[in-house]
Length: 171
Image 1 (tube, rainbow, N blue to C red):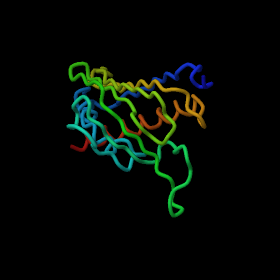
Image 2 (cartoon, rainbow, N blue to C red):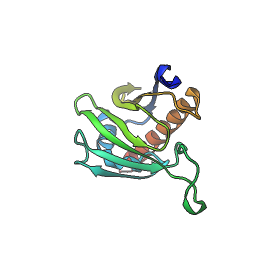
Image 3 (cartoon, rainbow, N blue to C red):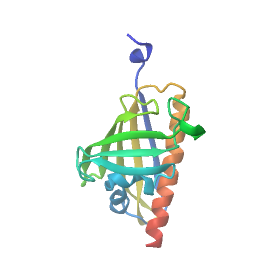
Image 4 (cartoon, rainbow, N blue to C red):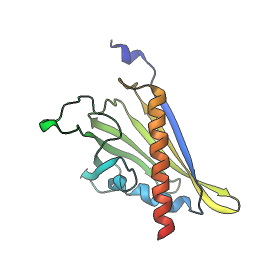
């Protein structure tokens, strides 16, 4: 039995509160566009569907970018290596505003990766707002500490929420 098989899974929860009067339904509409994550997650240069209908359980997206380093460093022609993953939508609940997905293949060292995003209504100073909660369960990742991975998700979520806020404020 490999050593990492005996290690407990990493369980991560990050969240961010949207400061402007933006509803949970408005923010969840961005997450329902499963093939459009690169519009909001700035470290992803590419995200598109490779199987199924966008937002339907079972559909698969291909994401590529530079948020996490690939397992192997070499790329053809001396170019920087591209990190990629294929992710399957496993559940979506429009009423509870939750979306769950898993990584089915990648080059970034994630194994047994499962994630749920939940958008929770939150009233702040009498204005309707919301909180984005992101739950991740993953086998320990070689080349990374738990704390480094949590920080990457915290920063990524905060940047994503800001982009969503800005887009909704200007529309």
